[in-house]
Image (cartoon, rainbow, N blue to C red):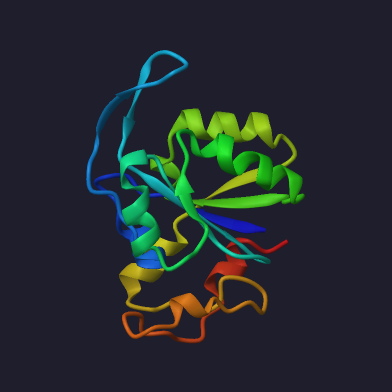
Length: 168
């Protein structure tokens, strides 16, 4: 039903490739709930039907994120799962492919599972594979084309790679 692309400060390419936004700083941050976590990442949710969403964990960078991202729905989220989880659940998604599965934070994954217990979250490396192959993404869903991706900085080709990853 959707692809959730995730980078870290060191593995930023996949979200940057799709949205043009990337984080500039990484470090440790105290949480209001107690404890601390590493900051310096963002996520991009690409539903089969609907517009993509970009979230950054850097509140001081939101103006830059909105300026750089090619998608209008770009915002700050302290915990990505708290922002995206209710939307994933309420839209009735059944399956979400998480790109960069092995670097996706456990706290985010556990929170997504708690918020959207009926959703199957599956590993994906499709964006890394497509990006490294030199191929370009045109279609992020069944028949949906995201015109924001169709500009001169991307060599667009007719692929249906993501549809395989997020097929219902």
